[in-house]
Amino acid sequence: MSGCPQGNNREHKQGTPPCPCKYKAEERKKDMKVIIVGGGWAGSGAAIAARNAGAEVTVLERTDMLLGTGLVGGIMRNNGRFTATEEMIALGGNEIFETIDANCRHKNIEFPGHKHASLYDIALIEPAIRNLLVSKGIEVRLQARMKDVEMDGEKITAVILDDDEKITGDVFIDATGSAGPMGNCGKYGNGCAMCVLRCPSYGGRVSLVGKAGVPEKQGKKADGTIGAMSGSCKLFKESLSKEIVDMLNNTGVAVIPLPEELRKGEGALAKKACQQYALKEFNENIILLDTGHAKLMTPYYPLEQLHQVPGFENARYEDPYAGGKGNSMRYMALAPRDDALKVKGLDNVFCGGEKAGLLVGHTEAIVTGTLAGHNAVRYALGQELLVLPETLTVGDAISYVRQVMDTEEGMTKKYTFSGSVYFNRMQEQGLYTTDIATIKDKVDKTGLTGVFSKKLA
Image (tube, rainbow, N blue to C red; front, side, top):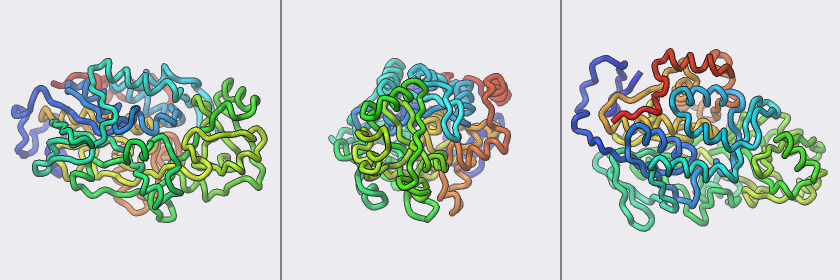
């Protein structure tokens, strides 16, 4: 199923006469330029897909590194993310996932509630992805913070940077995420905890869609309060006991039982963006994963209490630096969009990552970013937009999350391939499998094998 490039309400199937819009392919440039605002996992996925499809691509990232929260993340392929990853590889979105796989510290590990996970090395992944983008001829602009847009009706014609430089393009992708700026962490969280997003140094997030005048939604917790707190912290691994360090280096996982008096209670887990990790085991134990640092699977943990746990007497936070106090607040700015990831209310803007809805995780960001980047080029060429079929996990997730976000209850939940609400749906719908041959065959039956690797122009 494909959608009208002009955003008309009705959709039409491939091969049927086009809808009666004024959009004409012959009027479109062959040397189209796609501008991506935000260089996280979604922006990086979008850049590769748009470049593969034949566009000139520029990525504008406000900080001095790509990947955003992916700089301190690291968990891949756990539970249904394995299925989604292999679907994307079969669809031609393989390059970014192959680069991640090549930079993993551990593969096929298990921790409470999660199987066959991979953990990438957070020290190696950013230069690997940046080199991939540059090698493909993608222009990567670091410390290039957007502050405003220029419009022509419902089209963005240019973005304006902090230094007043104007960047023009044919199609724009909002991959600015939903965390920050600092005011939101103060109003809805525990204040700035000095996380890897580094708003004090590089300025807070500025929403492309918001600057274009489109009203955005805010996610909520179950109690109705706004936003959700990032779900994990990073400890300097060498500040832990030798026994814990050895366990992490050898197995990738350490599960340390917590004395009952030091447990934070289920209320702390309810604040997390990553509800797939809001299990009782994460309250009763300290669960660490080895991503280079020791990834502590809780939004925050008071340092004076952490020091009372055997093996953590000298523990020190690496991200956020005030991880004893809090963490970044997310899901503050979600764009209205269709299943082709075109932003509603704008003619030439697509979105990916958390901007595209209450989707949690790196895999989810790459999936939506890749589709947004691909469809940006289809739009520029006047082609029908691609909507991934719901027979695939990646297509079903994009459609399902859009639908549930139209309900009050749906806005209080988070959705991920790796657990909680959506992984349950995957299993109920028969979408979850780790059989790669089965996944390839399912993709092949859609007629979309390799679609994200093909040049469209």
